[in-house]
Image (cartoon, rainbow, N blue to C red; front, side):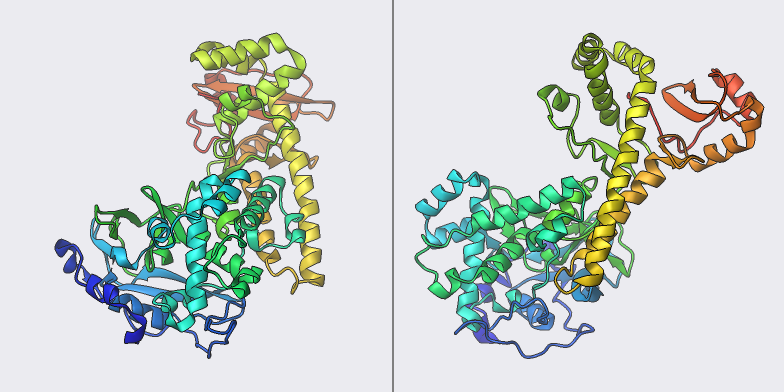
Length: 526
């Protein structure tokens, strides 16, 4: 094993923060619950089999990490579980970790850093110019890391990074790994993000102008794809560099995180516990905005079912600057999964769009009120046109769920007849079901006609059904009942001859409920 570790790695074992030393231990060498089969030879001198079904050597990686000076908290473990037929490895703790305690320490010499790679290779001016011309100037650091991965792959077992690379996944489920058919089975936003990943991979595969790669490496798109996956699923921003930190890259993503990472002035990486972490808990960090599960699926290839919200899927044919100023973006136009709330930006953009079709003068009054912080005017316009925005939202939800039905049918058919060709379809079907559940349990309920409505929580629906007869309900036409309670706007839709309006006191009396409404699904902006 010693031949795999260079002198710099061995010396780095003693370069760590003394105050952290008592909290760390060498990585556990307990074997994980899977077998390691002999590795195949892919190229002349490459001993890493990157085939999707290839096994991963985690035990050798842990030994390598220990020799190289990577330290972990007592109780830190790497555990494996099967996910969609492939091994997924993540970090957990078998012992309590107090808040503020060290979890992982990674010396600078054990970090793959874009800045160090650029110094090692020198700047490839022609390659950088090609990336810039194609609109990928911001990805130059990641490109150099891809080249580093390919160089170390070509060295095979002679590479000091071999034990680390041989521990990494071969199977990925992100956008760059999906088939073209996969893109047709998911909603437009996530499909576009997945296609962007594939386009990024294609544009970063700049091979011809790299003098130090063999023709075999240059001509193997599977190797370039694997290098891309390693860099983009395991690397993170670090000051001015883009880094891959072995061991820390086994921290999974979580909406609720246990660990945060930072660097010292010498470039060493360390992670600490954000809170008290009880034994047998996962150790997770944040990969990005938890309210944007579409990005996490497209970039990293997993479904974050703990995400508190999802994009509302409103995608206008043209997104103007005024709409952006009102808050149109994928991380702000949200339906909240657990509370059922609709974000303020959704209501603002819906009203702005509807007014553009019915009353452009009022549309500009509304926009100017927003830009000037004139809450009262903005609120007044919202109240006057609430039936318009509510109907637009209901129509959008209805239409989107119909489209989602079609996507699911296509995905289910593909999974039945061509599962081997499209192995990521089960994940995509779970994604679609997650989106459906968010729409149904959060922002919508369904009435007796089967039409989707943006209404209220289940408790309010049950109260309505019990009290319907008190309002002489008939099947003549649909009307709305609106109750303003502070800043809460509740809309009850049912069949009545005439609209009925209540104040808070009368509403509570007529419906026999206490005027404290928990879990209200729809709040007016503000």
